[in-house]
Image (cartoon, rainbow over all chains, first blue to last red):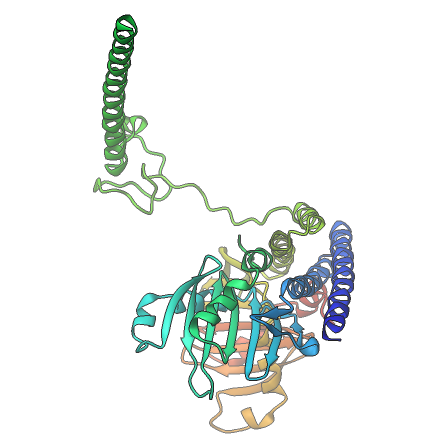
Length: 202
Length: 264
């Protein structure tokens, strides 16, 4: 039943992507036409809207790349969330939630946020990790320097992982997993493919 | 067998000689290259080049008489002109469409942003064209004109021009698609913020538009919010009364700005 629901979700996401792509193409055509007729304001509005549509396309493409289960923990079918930033500051937000008994994983991806580039540079600074009293560690996940942090205030062993990719970030909140299991979950993601979608400047 | 052994030894000897010769040749070539490289680096660091030995130097960023490495002015003391002109809009839109066709979303975003900047640059130029060339004896400093587009919703498009002369300094700034414009609207719609005898703000009218005067240590700032997300702000220094500042703001054709920016 769960597999069926996930399949329906994936098919639905595929349809949405196609629709958003068509809409994006229409907006670009509108911008081109308006610019050629000297209507700069209309062209500008169409381009701004095309960025919103692009956020949708990217968000839906990311959702398609997310695994249906991590470390044997299945995704909750209706947990997927996707918000377009529109303003260009907050970027695109995508999330999926995995749960089985006491083990849960909350996966979040925030893309194209210029503020994150600064945060990312700071969090992968080894000095920061060395000052954390052993709670933080920098490891490579999918080839990217990532911050693994022991999460306090949880009844079960928990780790948070932050994988910065230029002006985007993948965040994993793993509850009920050891540090090595959490890192393995990070490595099980298709980071390379996700990175190629979310890297704005590469 | 003996012959074979001798032949083998001969081949080995020839091969080792060749290797040695190659190695010596490579070593010499390497040394030569290193010498040339060092000389080139020395020349660059000393700011010298063959063409400069005549003493003539077409410098834009100034000469480097101290003979230091000339960082900031280029290796030979020259610097090219700055060119901030955006790439052609049509080309960027076409590149975005091509990138989208090949599902390269990263490039699609990049080219859309470039096209957006190109259009906003055109809009900025039109706005500047509609600004007066002088106000109260202060002339516009076209070389200080600035068009800035962040592409972000809450910063938006920012166009500014300065005026100097006759003991006046003015800065006309137009913000479009920006959260700043909303803050002026908020001031106007909240009389409690300015209806006070010690307030630094005061509501006024500039032509047909409601406006806000701000008293600062330098002088008067006149802000006119218009349309859905735009504001015109004239920062002034040197006026003796707020009436003079308002009169200066009235020289700007807000209706025309609205038309250019497609504001309602």
